[in-house]
Structure formats: C-alpha cells, structure tokens
Image (cartoon, rainbow over all chains, first blue to last red; front, side, top):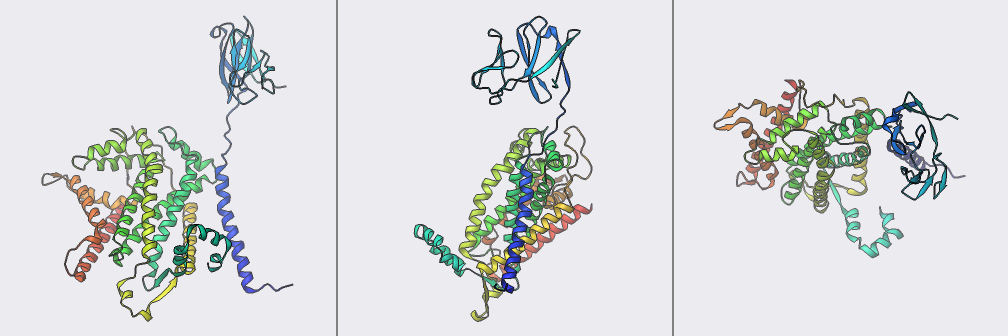
Length: 145
Length: 360
C-alpha cells in the first residue's frame, strides 16, 4: 500500500471541498427550477345554474375546481356531466348535437353520452360526475365510487 | 497549464484553429506586483458579480411575470413558495448593489492610478459606458417588483429625464410608455432590463475585455520608472487567476451571507392612486444626484433649477468619459495634477451628497 502523502491529502481535501461547494450551489438551483405545487380547493359540489339556462340538446363547458367539465342536456329532464379533457392527449372535447355523441376534434376521438370511448384514439372513458336537479337548480358533484 | 498544451485535445484544436496566440498569452501574460496591485482585482470582482447577475436573473425569469396584476404577486410567490426563491431573489438584489459598488471602486482606482492614459483611452471609455449601463440595469430593475417604493422612485426618476430641454418630454414618454407610470411602463422596463441592456452590455463588455487582454495590465508611473531588475511580476496563469478565484469565492460568500441575513423587503404593492409614502428615495448610487437636485432653487437666471442640474450632471459625465483626451494644461505633470484634483473633488462631492442624502 502506498502512503498517502501530504500533497495528495491536500489535493483530496481540495477536491472534496470543491465538489461540496458545487453541490451546495447546484442543489438550490435545481430545487428552484422545480415549480412548487399549487393547491387549489377542489369543490365537492357546484351549482351551475337552472334548467332554463340550458336548452335541450345543448352543452356547456364549465370549471369544476381546476377540472373542465362538459355539461350536456340530452333530454327534457336528463343532464349529464363528464370531464371535458380527452383521455388521448388532453384536448377539450365537444358535444355534437346532431350525432348525439361527444367528439374530440384534435384526433377524431368519439365517446358516447355516458363517456365511453367508442372510436378513435382515446384509450379510456371520460369520468362522470353526478348531476342532480333540485327545484330546477342544477348541482354537479364528484362521483365517489 | 503546460500539461494541457501537450495534450491530444489541444493538438487537435491547434491543428484546426492555430492556437499559438492563446498559448503565448497563457504562458507569457504577466501581472506587475507593486503597492497598487490590489486594484487589479476590482474589475474582475465586478465581472464576477455581473456573471452572478446574469445567472440569477435567468433563474428569476422562470417565475417572474411582468404586469400590474402579476409582477408583485409573482415576487410574493418567488419569495414565499418557490424552493430557494428567497435566496435567488436576494442574491440578485445584493449582487446588483455590490456590482455597482465595485464598478465605482474599479473606476476610481483606474482614475487615480492614471491607467486610462495612452494606449488605454478606449478601455476607459467602454468602462464608463458599462457603468452607465449598470446604472440603467439598476434603475429598470428597481421597478420590476412593482412595489410602492419602486413605483414612486420611477415616477421621480423618469420625471427628471423630462426636464432635459427640447427632447426631455419625448424621452419621458418613451421611457414610461405613456404619460404616466403604469403597467405599460412595467412592460417596457422589463424589456429594457432583460433584453435591450443585456444585448448592449454583452457587446461593450466584450470589447472592454478584449482591450484588457490585448494591452495587458497597466503599470503605474512609479513602477514604470523602476530599473528593470527591480520590477517584480507574477504569471497571470496560474498565479493571478488562482488569486482571482479565491477572491471571487470570498465575494460569493459575502453575497450569500448578505442575502441570508439581510433580505430585501418586498414592501407594499404599488397603488397608483395612493399618495407617496415618506422617505421615497432612489437606489444609493443615484442618491448624490437626487440630493443635489433637491438643493437647487426653483429658478437660476432664466433656467429652471432642475434643468440646469440635469444639464450639469450630463456635462460632467461626458467630461468624465473623455478624461483620457482632456488637456487642461500643456505640460503633462500639471495636467495630471489638475485631473487628480478634479477626481478628488468629484469623489468627495459624490460621497458627501450620498451621506447627506441618507442623513436628512
């Protein structure tokens, strides 16, 4: 075994010190670049208006907390609410009133009115929210299975 | 360094780029050693602080959002939510102040050792322009947090630009992006601070450094007159560079310590309808001008006092920039004497007014 000379020792010390100093600079910069999470209150339920605001066979996109939700009135008493982001690549879907389907214009994804993906690239169905109509007031809430 | 010059990498580059001048520079560049050697480090420290500014400024850009309704809020977000955001912001603010401080020291040391004289006239001129740019950085950056203090300081500062005869009003409107300091001013100052000034500074700094490399260190007259045998030198590589590096490391530690123990207050958000709070003052390096303008009477002969003041500072600034070309007397010795008194007078005036500005 070779002896660790004084010069080697100082060199190791310098190397170790330099690396530690660089790490002490690099770590805060690395952390700085990672954006902190922004917490936004996710509501449990949301009043979105009265039945009169929505004609039959129409739709509207609303915000439920941070989630865009598509609200569709497909019958006299029938309201549906589904997440409005396509499960394929995050585009916002739309309601096609003549086909009575939900379509995504980005890559021709098609869902039926329950949110099931029926043609095109979407890999998963749209998740559903529960909709209640109380005294003509529409309230949507998260479906907790 | 010599082992690097024997390496395959160097040979590969040398065959293609002819690096003989670089090798020559590295092997033969020397730094004179004398009583004033310490001043040689001031420019390097200013450069180092400028690099910190570039680096921390780019980091801040990741989160800063210019705009009346977002600038202040984004700073709150940076200092309270972003990991180490408080550190990066305070390093930027402290390093900015130290950079201007060291630029002033660098300038006055060059002045009093008369390092600006032939053949270094243009190095002095570009250096002066860099100081003006640094002050421009300071002035434009001051507004970016969109807090009360900065808002009113910018109102006052741009208003002073407005008193310049004939073109002042135009300059004011261009600076403000309108008649008043508003969100439009903020957008403008942001653009000036992160795009226009950096572009100009990069070019002028490049020229300044090129001159310094090309001409080498200036030797003071006392040193020049020594017999050749008594002149002491050290090698630039690695001796001077290592000393430089050690000093830069210490400067970094000072900046970090200041940032940690003396953070800058964000203050209250700017409110254009609120009345100005007491104690509105510009950054310290504008204080001497701000304080002098306060002393002037409203009217001097048929000029407005402020107009005369602004013109005076403009004229002295121009004279200062052209110092290497100024000849008060024919004989070099008495000319140098007058210049030294002029420099001392300016220094005492700046120091006095600055201190006075903070006392009253």
